[in-house]
Image 1 (cartoon, rainbow, N blue to C red):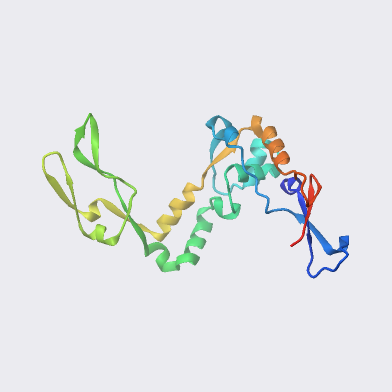
Image 2 (image 1 turned 90 degrees about the horizontal axis):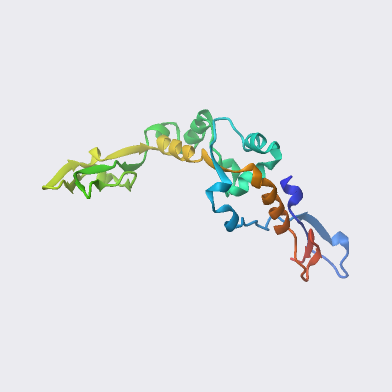
Length: 223
C-alpha cells in the first residue's frame, strides 16, 4: 500500500544522446521525497495510544490488530519516525543475545563493562517538605567516579561514601537489554484519525507544477 502512494520520478540514464526519447529514461519511486507529519494535527496525546510491543510481534501484526489491515504498517512506521524499522523495533531475548554476542564477543558481552551509572541518592534532609536529592540517578559516570569517594551535604555536615555505593556497573548485555526495552513503547495513531492521515499523506505526495512536472504523480529530471 505504501509504495502505491509514493509518486514516481523519471530520471535520465547515462550516457544519453540528443534528441531525447523515452528509452533514455527510467521510471522509479521517488523515495527521496520525505513526508513530514503535520505537527498541528499530531502533537497531541489525544491522537495516539501508547502501546508496549511484546516479544515476537511484528509491525504488520499490530497494524492488522488496530487497523484491520497489515498493509497499514507504514502508518506506524511514519508516526513513530522509524528510520529503519528493522533496528527500531524490539527483538526477542534469544535474538538479542545473538546480536550482543556478535557485537561484543561471547565473553565481553556479559562481563565487559559498558559504563557506570549513578543511583539516586537522598541527602537525608528535606527542603520545603521535599527530600533533597544529593545525586541524580541514571547519570553516566566514569571508572574514576566509581572507585573514588563521593561526598554530599546531609543537612548537618558532609557525608562521605565510596563511589561504588552510589553507582552501578552496567555490562554490555545489560545496556543492550535496556536499549531494547526502550523500543517497546510505541505510539499507535487512533483508528478514527487513520483516514485523515492517509488522505493527508496522499495530498503531500502529489507534485506541484514546475519545469520537470509531468503529472501530479510523475516528474522528469535530468541528472
